[in-house]
Each structure stands twice: as structure tokens, then as C-alpha cells.
Image 1: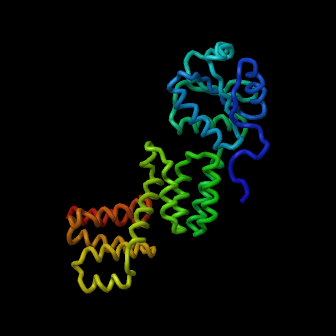
Image 2: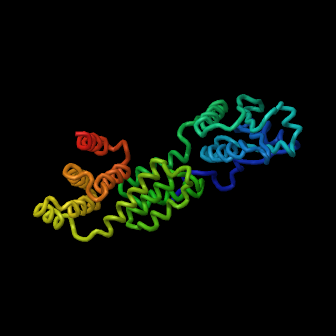
Image 3: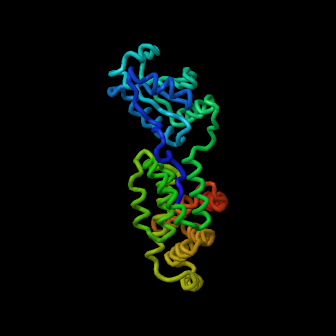
Length: 305
């Protein structure tokens, strides 16, 4: 597969370090051909430990449209004094040999991304979606079209470029799940940090994995289970098994309808098992899915009637 993201082989690095002696070449001269972001930091600086990795990730995502140069102020006080750096972290942006923008202190990812986009535009470039965002979209399109192999390869490229890209972790897990590799899908999410555990993509992938594991252990097919339900409509466990079998057969609407039926007749059954299973399906499908939005309204009317 062709390279979709990252720097072409042999290209100049987009993240470097500079000293007082190399600052002119690494920043001033380099900024005449590419926008350069300068990160003034120090090893003892707590906010620097948050900002610098975020800057590195955002710059790598732009795949060569902008360069990051890091300056350790403990070891290179000359250029810091010359630019009147009074506190760290301090970030400056250079275009065509001149400083054009900057900020002080740690910033959220959204502000860092906006700053980098302004720098690219100041240098006459087009920010647009990053190559990583474009690759994520291409992978999602392939997966939605049933091509889990291609999608998985793209997600793999993204993770080689950025091992902490949460959407790619979740996407790869979904690809493995589509191929029936449940244990590998679960393992693909092991690297998700605790701080990102509630990310919507991760929650959806985990719920899909749990549902797949539940249906893999289920005996009997939907036709057989449907006959049992019709013979004894009050048997909630058989109806639950039918719901899982329907979901396994890509009939999410049918599965939701059966779970709703259990809730309608006995919402407390088996420690609210039907409602909990329903929530997992909602999470797996995603909050924007039309079926989920409609079903949530129906669930509310049942619960609060």
C-alpha cells in the first residue's frame, strides 16, 4: 500500500533541537522555506512536559507543512534572552525569517492545532485536514464499505506514525472484530490510556467487542430462538438470547425491539440486564446513529410512562 501519511523517505526531519549556535540556521533560515515553530522549554518545567508532546504530535500530523524546533533554555540562554523569553513554556512562530505569532503556557490541543494552522497559512500554505485526518476518513470509508483489510492497513500506518492516535486504535479494533478476531480486537485497545477511556470511539469499540463476545458464546440461531419466544413470550432469557442472535446477524433494529419488549414487561429482570445490553448496542452504534436516536426516545417513553 502506498504511504498515506508521514514524511517521505529521505525528507528533512520536522522536529529538531537548536542551540544558541544553530538557531539562525535551524529557525531563521529554515523559516524562509517552511513555517517554523520554536518551543522554549526546560527539563524542570511541568507545563513543558504537557505542551511539548502535544506540539510534536500536532506537527507530525501535518506531515511536512510545518517544522518544530525545540530550545532548552537551561543550556541555551543567549537566544532566549535575545527574544526576551520571560517564562516557559514559550512558543514563537517564524515565517520568512521573522516572528509572526506566539503564546506562553500550556494550551489545549484545539488551540495548538489552531496555532499551527495559522502558521501554515501565514507561510502561504493550505492547512486543511491533516494527512492523519484524511487517512482516518479513508480508513473509515473502507471499513464502512466492508473492506476491513484495507481499513486495517491504513489504521496500522496511522499508528506507526502516531502510536497514541486514539481513533486509529479504535478503528483497528473494529477491523479485527469484523474479521472475527475478538481477542485481538480487545488487545488493540490495551494501549488506550486511562485518560482516554471515555473517548466515544473507544467506548463504541469496547461495546462492540463485548457484544461480539456475548453472541459468540450463544447457542442456537435466530429462527430457533424466535420459535421459542413465540411459544413462551414470558421467557425473558430466551428473548435476550434472540436479541443477541439478531444483533450478531446484523439486525440491530430487531435486537433493540426484543430488548425493549423485555424492558416493557419487566425492566428490573435479571438486574436490568435488558437495559444494560441495550446501552451497549447504543454505544456500539454511536450516539449519532438514527436508529439509536429513535430508540432512545422509545426507551424514555417506556421508562417514564
